[in-house]
Amino acid sequence: MALPHEFLAVIKTAFPGDFLTQEQAELDAYGRDWTKVFPPKPSAIVFPRTTDEVSRFLKLCSQQKIAVVPSGGRTGLSAGAVAAKGEVVLSFSKMNKMNPVDTLSQTVRVQAGAVTEAVHRHCEAHGVTWPVDFASKGSSQVGGNIATNAGGVKVIRYGMARNWVLGLQVVTMNGEVLELNGALEKNNTGIDLRQLFIGSDGTLGVITEATLKLSRLPEHLDVFFFALSDMSAVLKLFHRARQAPFPLMAFETLTRNCLEAVTSVRSLKDPFAEKHGVYVLMEVERPSNSSPSSPGDALDEWLTRLFEDGLVEDGTLAQSPREARDLWQLREGVAESIGHLGIPHKNDIALPISSLEAFVREMYEMFERRHSEFSIYLFGHIGDGNLHVNTLKPKDAELAPFLAKCHEADKDLFELVKKYQGSISAEHGIGLLKKEALKYSRTPQEMEIFRGMKKVFDPANLLNPGKIFD
Image 1 (cartoon, one colour):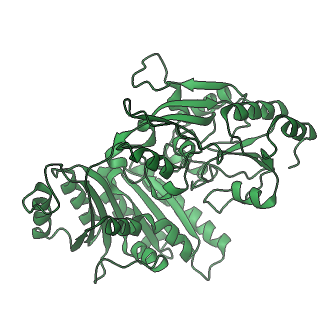
Image 2: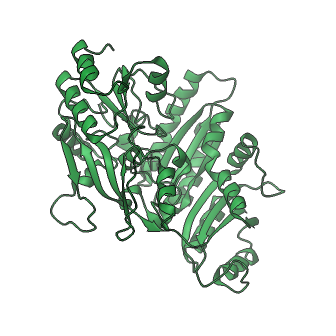
Image 3: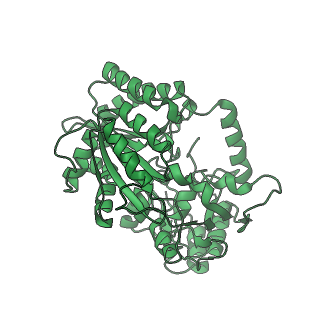
């Protein structure tokens, strides 16, 4: 889509010289996210450095009726940051400043383009962290984390991103700048507008800065990797871990084919000599009054009973920070490794934790009965009920028929999710990819409220149009 001459003239005179680009390589890179279903077709990419530039740019786009797609680290899996119909992409890659850590209030103010892992490093020197953590932390940005209400591997301990956002600076499509909640822990003055923008897929307003709430760094983390027979054993282990006398930081699972994928692609060593059905990565915070070498502490006693009862088939404990990182790679490298083996079809679902065992059993039965041609790569965050269900395109299969079969399988999968009162999107939002499936998790009444909110904040439907609903 060609941009109006008047629009380009204002950009040239009122913004920095490197503010806008229409170079094809940049269009291809910034017009997409990690999904591969929708080809990127942006008309331009802009790179603001300040909230004022974002405000003036959005006001100009409103006047010229130009659609805008906000773009962070582009690590999403629902096409929420894809510009597929000639929109202008608003990239936050140059808005990455971080203010000094406020050690008294344990907060930090950052721009939306600050990379998640950079925020972690920025805070660690003060003994605190922003405890929103996931495999894509080296690329994802804070604004995108908040706009999708990101979860990740530590939700079982810390909850979702919205729990760790005190204040937001948001720009609406007409260029108005909103300061929401500042750095207040308590503010009971009516509707909390901040929460409307968290998890809204960038459809209501553009987050430009955030005041993040921080948590102390855990003192000593133990990372375990267990081998088990099946999902039933995994859930029994999780129940035991919930009742154990130590804080549980993460409880992740992956099936045998997931482990084979990541060890093959990343040249990592399988921790065990024999093959097993399913695996669990468990991270715990060791109580401060114990030590890794103390044979009588509560954690060691719990582990001893675990093996005596035969609940796990094998297990290993990281003996150094490097071994801990290697074990975490076995889990965090799964999604990327599956992608290296072929074209995966991904689903990111959530179930009530108490329903996981029955759901997984019925899910496998459904695939075997109706879609036996698929190999299921299952991994995810057992601690918060979030499962990633992946199917991989066979090398000799054509893409279009494969995707058509996936679409049919999705209907059966989502009917099962609905039966168990789950969610068809646990942590990647809706975007373009999951609009048709939203009916399995949201009622018509809820959708009507969504549309009403959109009309209030973006009546011309110019901000991330087509995402969540048309």
